[in-house]
Length: 115
Image 1 (cartoon, helix red, strand yellow):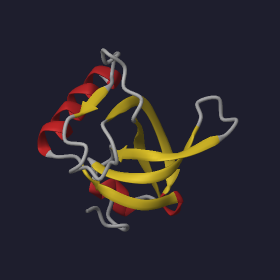
Image 2 (cartoon, rainbow, N blue to C red):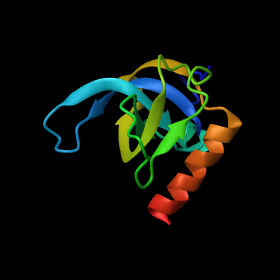
Image 3 (spheres, one colour):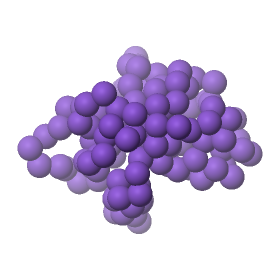
Image 4 (spheres, one colour):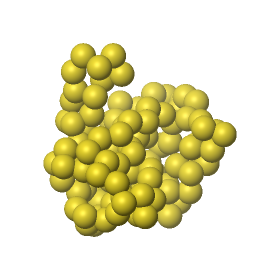
């Protein structure tokens, strides 16, 4: 279970996630993609959205979370290639952590997305 003070890559949290059009937000799980050092130095964190709406075939940059129960999720889920930053105090709750295989697939997806 991630700590509420030292967030790090692959921690799964519950956060108010802003819509891409900035009109509103929805409470949903997200995965932290910044390092622990970044988290200790900054007041914000960098995340990617997680959704339980899984398509038949993953699209560019999506990561299917194979071990979703270990990550603290309620149902099968996918990480969406939508990156956002929020202040740490907007995190509602720590849920869990991606296991090593899911974490590695996330790193590979990030490399595809940001180069």
